[in-house]
Structure formats: structure tokens, C-alpha cells
Image (cartoon, rainbow, N blue to C red; front, side, top):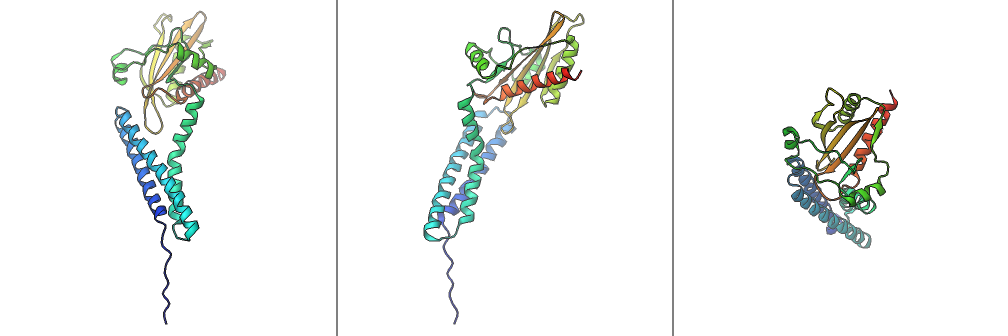
Length: 260
């Protein structure tokens, strides 16, 4: 006589959680792909799609929790599905959650500079304007200055015992080593009393949003001063990205000078 073995039913909430989490990841991937493919021109649309992906991830997490409760109470199958849904959702939510914490901790600014009295200006050559799509970051106001000085006191002008041409070549090399794309540059003039300028751009890791960087090298008596400014094109909060960028440049300059 054969025995009929009935399999335990699968938790529907757990199964749906996994499907929703996978769809959320695909949606987030589509948002990032669009942002990178359009060079940030469709930033608002890409962020809206990514926000939808986060809502889906939150729903998947709730469904995974409901599935876990159902499995515990009824003995139904579906633990792997619930775990997969929860892990995918948490992986998607983790970085935005970290940025939310950073936004609460850091000042709401989208540019930093080493010189507020005379911030490094962005070049107006054809190449530089085309690279910025004819957009120029607005000058940092008193509110930006106050917030930056409080949050990033180490961002200050660099006064070096170097000739302007030496400082220019060093700055150009460091900018390239940091992975920045050099847009345009002008060395000091032949008499050595003219400012040198370097314009560069860099992109954020996931969405490839562009930030514009301006470096100015000028003679200050027997020394040379290097100033740098970094501004984000997208958003009012840079989550500390511009400050970290400038701090890396300052540290690389110091290391290069110390190695001489």
C-alpha cells in the first residue's frame, strides 16, 4: 500500500518577497544605467526611478518579515525565498541609508573651496565651457563658508616653497593620478607672475554625476599658493564628497612636497 506524502505549502509572502526584491534590484540597475548613459542630464528622472526601487525594496523587506512569521507559525516552506528577499532588499537599502545618516551629520552644501575671498574661477575656454555644458557653478556664499569652516577646518590654501611652474606640473600630475579628467589647463606665463589654472571633472561612483574642479596656482612672493574648488552639478547636498576630494588633493600635494 503506497503512502501519499503531502508537501508543506510554500509561504506566499516569502515567494513574493523574493520576486519583488529582484524587481527592485533590476529597477535600481536601470536607473543607474540611464544616469550613466546620459552623463547625468536625466538626473531627476534617474533618481525618481531609483526612489521607486527603494520603495520596492522596503516592500520586499516587509513581505520577507511577514513570510518569516508565517513560516514560524505554520511550518510552511519558504525560508530560502524569504532570506533572499530580505538580503537583496537590505543590500539595496544599505547605501542610501548610510547617505541619510551622512546627510544628518554633514553640512548641506554642494561645493567647497580653499579660498572664499577669491574662489578659484572656472575657465571660460571653449573646451572648458563645452565640458560644463555652458554651466558654471555659482560662487559660494557666506552660508557655505560658515558651514565649511565648521565641518572641514583643514581645507585651507596651500602655500609652498615651489616655483609656480613646479607647482603647476605637480598639480596636473596629482589630478591625473586621482583619476580626474583634465578639461583644460593654462601654465604660468613666461615671466612667472601669472596665475596657472587647471579645470577637471570627476564622476560619482554609481550614478556618474559630474563634479567640476578648478585649481589655481599663483605666485605669492617667494612662495606659490595652490587653491582648489570642487562643486557638484546635481543636488544641494554632496554628502561630503567634495570635501573628501579636496582633502585627498591637499594630502597628495603635501606628500609630494615632503618627498622632494
